[in-house]
Amino acid sequence: QTVDLRKATCLPGFIDSHTHLTLEFGKGAYLNKFVDTDGDVAYKAARNAKVVLMSGFTTVRDLGGQHLVDVALKKAIERGDVPGPRMLVATNLLSISGGHGDPSAGYREELFHPTEADGVVDGVDSAIRGTRIAIKRGADVIKVTATGGVMSVADHGSGAQFSSSEL
Image (tube, rainbow, N blue to C red; front, side, top):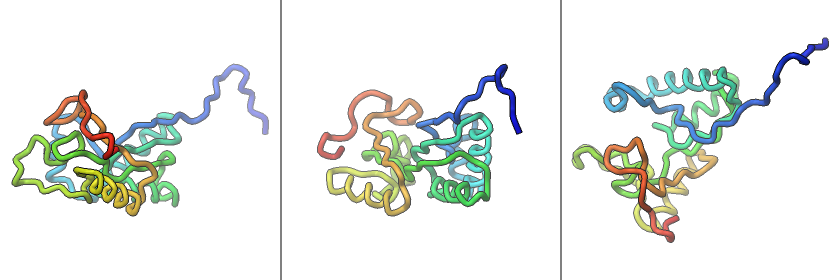
């Protein structure tokens, strides 16, 4: 079969190098992280993966997910269980205490006790352990929040947060 594409534009799949398919941004997003189950997060992530794929993105680099749903979603897409783009995942991003990726930043300290398993690392040895945990859990890439972030509750997007030794 021959398809005449002389009057069409044919593009390869796009690559989005910074996604968070398991995260939501917008009204109610902060409350959702307290009420959504891992299953809720997974179904929303599967929906997001399909939307991204249907928008023309055939590969994404997902840089920080919730509850290892990013790893499960990647595997489900690879098995053909759900439609979605090829994924490279970071699992938990690495952050200093109080930094951009610290889940307790901006909240009452007694509510959260993040550890290296959550990606919160302080010092060289801790950064190494946090990296190894991410790799063990299935990370293809390691995301380090070297500065603050625009979506953070307790910091801003300027200024170094890691020492050069930690990096």
